[in-house]
Image (cartoon, rainbow, N blue to C red):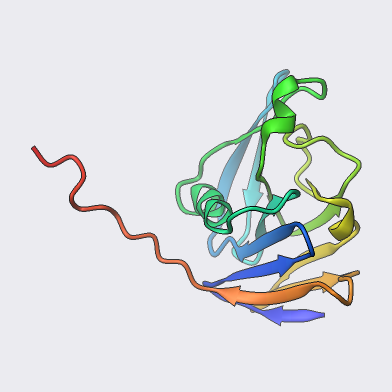
Length: 161
C-alpha cells in the first residue's frame, strides 16, 4: 500500500500502540551511539523516520522525537541489550530507507536502523520510503492510518528577564 506524504506525519494506529512516520526530507548524516562504538549513517531525502510507541500514549512526543532526528540531527542512543533502562523507553525511533517492526527486540538496544521495536499487534510491518510517500506492507486490516500536521511553535514568553 502506498501512502502519499510530504511534510506531514503519518499515524499508523493499532488498538493499543502506534507508529508515527515522516520523510527525512533532506540528505544528512546521523550518528548512532552504542556502548562499544559509534556508527555513522547517511540519510537520504526519501528515507523515513519512524517513532514507535509500543504501549501507546500521546502522539506529540513521538512527533518531537522525529523532529529531534530530522531537523536537529540528534544522535541516536543505543543501550546494551541487558540495560535495565530499556523497559522505560515509551517511544523509540529508527531512521533509514526501509524499516521493519519487531516485537522480539528490546527497546532502544538495536543499533541497526532497519528494525524498530513494536507491540505484538503491529509487528511485521514493512515500511519503505519512496518518492512522494511511504509503502506499507503487512498492515493489519483493523489498523488505521491518519495524516497529521504538527507545527512546533517556540514559546516566546520563556526566558524573559
